[in-house]
Length: 325
Image 1 (cartoon, rainbow, N blue to C red):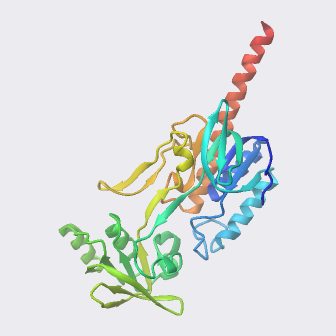
Image 2: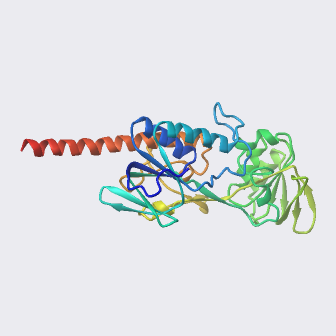
């Protein structure tokens, strides 16, 4: 839906990203009688998944179903939508101008970025084809669906051991593949062994499948290890280009000094280091499930409304003083 092409409106808030965080903010702001424009490029992070989980009252719903319902709710409170990719933004006095990929622009008094992140996958044959189905990353998102199955965890970032121990909660058959050549400490070996997690050294070259289902992991020396699901850590990089164009820098996401992504820091209400610019969802919290992202969007919406109230009150006080002079 595109309700703004050619419009010269200045919205109270422009929201970049129409996922759970952006839509929740749009509902909150709409209910506060604010004008809202949501700019979305139609590429949600969880698009490969067939079902969403741990979202209260929507357990097992398709991700696009949740988004359709959210858009309808936001529209019911007056929010407008624009399909497009936001590529940059600049401050123009008391407003922000957001440039889109087609060369057009939209304007808002406040800017909220909920564009999410991009998952970078290791270059392994067959891995990307099964991402979101037989290749997983979050046990709270998909652990129940693969409970009691044979799971292979591919080491691709510093959280690999933690991940293997986590997935052990859902099944007693977990194997950690040291694909990235990571050397484990004696303590890590002891912890994995105590929980019955097998360790296989060497690179993984392919994810094998049959009939659309994962069946095994192929090692560099040619051996096939039967597994029914694959777990892999991704490089989680915030979609922060619009924020960076305003001087809001993305920060490294690291564990033990090893960087495996980026995120943007905000305060508890979603405010960034630049006045009037807010962010929420996976762009600020890569591990947030959709219900947490939605909650962050609600808080950011409330924060933006409070910010606008303060600005409007200050203007009213100044106008009153001028008229009384």
